[in-house]
Image 1 (cartoon, rainbow over the protein chains, first blue to last red):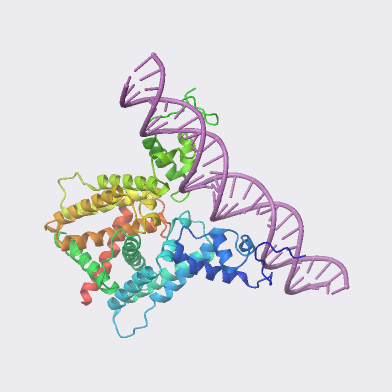
Image 2 (cartoon, rainbow over the protein chains, first blue to last red):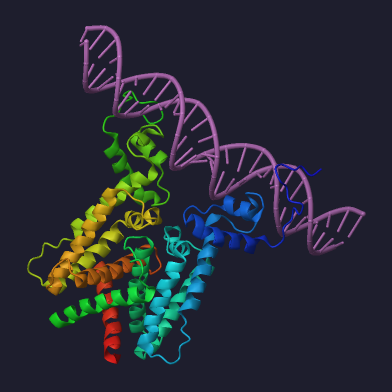
Length: 208
Length: 208
DNA sequence: AAAATATCTTGACAGCGATAAGATTGATTC
DNA sequence: GAATCAATCTTATCGCTGTCAAGATATTTT
């Protein structure tokens, strides 16, 4: 006898549940925020029981790990610049802009990607790989710009610096530490801040 | 018997509980991480019931709000450079280093200060004030360095850029996106990354 | 068709934030 | 000094969460 509790599905077995859970989680992520995303709510959204997810993901950390990995893959895609006309410097600026826009378009996902959940270093290999993929894209752009090989320490250092800067800007804006001025475009904001940096650096090199 | 854990306290009325809760929370913060800090555990640590805190703080957000505010005040203190000998550029470097060291010494607190809990913009006024205090300290340093008044848009832009960069670096290291090399000092790491930035900027200005 | 395996459900436990109502304290007032 | 009052703390409870255990159902294999 099929005991129907509240609303048991006709099709008890759904099928490929793993990607459905991931999609549902991705949808809900931006609605409820990175911290309040619960497995139970995701499961309910898909239409399965509260614990169905545990046959596809070991725990919550693994699910959001896949979600974060997905985010890094999308970020890597956004960073590759198709524009073959512009020079290296322009490409870096465009990449920085694309990075910033991605973060602002997916704030909860971005917070998840760089959130405290993976701060201990324990994470799914897929996430680590996706992160390296994104970072590699940035290194490639900078290597082209500097006219150096990708695997040089100079390129690595420069990429690290560039990443820090853009991530910091995006992070501060997303967490509403800096308020993004209304009526401003991402482009203008990024350029304006970069201008501030030039100002800073001119003073430094002038005195040195 | 000064303190009984499981049994009910002899002195049912504790006294000034608010600061005790804050101190206990601060202690536990670095142990359990910014997300897993619970009111119940903090209350138990102090030795009061699970819900005693609600007579001093409206909810969890308010407690950690005060915790974050405390963090920003400490950060502001760290940023003021006492060295009167060095020039402006040196002071900025020292401030950046102090900022980075503060973040690395209090990773959970730092994560809390810039975490998703206040991303919506809703926060205690005290937190907002403390944040402005810290940012003001940075602006003061940069204003001195650039030889401009504190309230000029140039200074604000430059401070915003500098903050973004240092915050980004600290954030990436703390969240173990960048692995801080073992055997390296904060000083060397900050300088190395800053060097990468110079490299980046030289290429940019050279092509422009 | 029967057996084995993968998948999903129900049930339960502990921990969490939060509210409501009662108990106890120190302070105020007569 | 005794009664009253407001602040403070406790107990009880609710709904939500992650997670495990055991049973039910579907799919695959033999």
